[in-house]
Image (cartoon, rainbow, N blue to C red; front, side, top):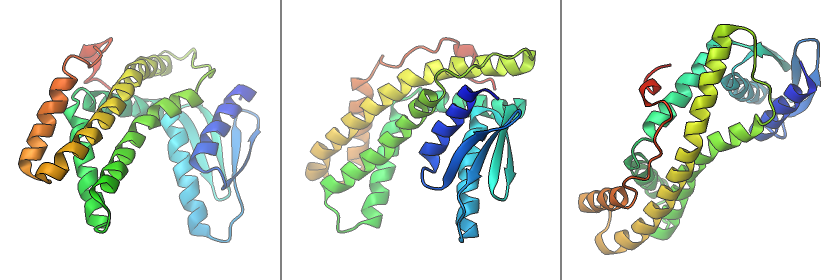
Length: 229
């Protein structure tokens, strides 16, 4: 395993569990991610699982041990899962109303959980929750910068290539939907004080945001393949 790959593993670990992991060590063919010693075995297991899941999403083979993780070569099964995950995300973002509905759902949750919060506070919290979704993939892809994703196994390379095609599609979609969140929360700030959380408000919001962003969706580079994976 090259030092460059170990650096990528370290970037991911620093994001997922910055205070719970030991430095990444380079071994023969693997990177070793040590789980910081903790008296709370359950918390250590939860941390290890979260990190393992994120590393597997890259497409690597990850072996879990009680006090560390071993990150190895590309795994076709994990790469196929990455392709499926990216495909589902790209498909979901083909409609701006997906994000409008997500903000409305988050708003309802915040109202229910924090009944003493003002409308403005609830809208702000809902917007921040949904906006965070659209930072996940850009952050993940930034962490992979410089990583060599060329191999001499045809099936594995096909999956790596398809993954990178979908990554190029998802970045502009995340940017667009971040703008949709901003416009949705602004519209809610204007609508709710006048009409409340009624079905008419929802209908008007969906129509307004839909019209504003009509024609804004980027055209996928390979539309026919969106359902593959």
